[in-house]
Image 1 (cartoon, rainbow, N blue to C red):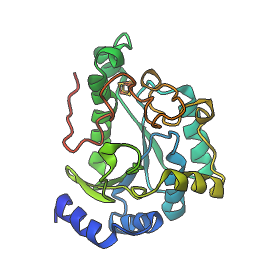
Image 2 (image 1 turned 45 degrees about the vertical axis):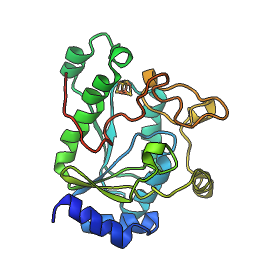
Image 3 (image 1 turned 180 degrees about the vertical axis):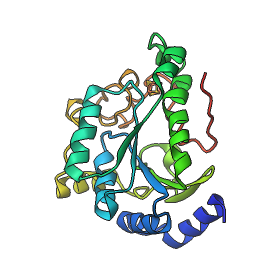
Length: 234
Ligand code: SF4
């Protein structure tokens, strides 16, 4: 059975299950062949907490773009230790690629899609070759583009699993409080959604939480979640 057919059956049978149940099913079905992809951003603690309870040895892939806020790198270390995650891996562009494709670190300004392609999309594509399925923390309420997000979907050669798809903003707040999860330090400084430093601003009251991501551009996603992904490196 290919990823598309598999995702359809999983969505039919488990698409309405709780996030914890979805993760248990995913662990059992893809034992040793599944990874979590986490940005260690503003809402990452919830998914990682759930994963840590189901199986703290599931690999967690962090895309280290080289352009993150230092606070994010520090948070990755502190949250991983707090949750007891056993296998957090950093993936990202090589130093040679960075020098060749973005020598003055200005590519995010004039070619954000190209920057994301070599800093995020290509490294993740390589890292996922070792796996059959991966888990993301996306939610339907976040953007109109995610409004129809299924819990199970096909992503090329992989099954992609979104255990938090149906979670609301209120439920997120409640979950964090209930489990006393440590917040990303930039949230208190006005960043409700956190990506790379050059492409993330604070958000004004009343704005969508992701309004500070690629502000001023039509771009709303980095590319790792597009249905058809490109491996363009230059
Ligand atoms: S989010 Fe910005 S800095 Fe990060 S990879 Fe994409 S364009 Fe580059």
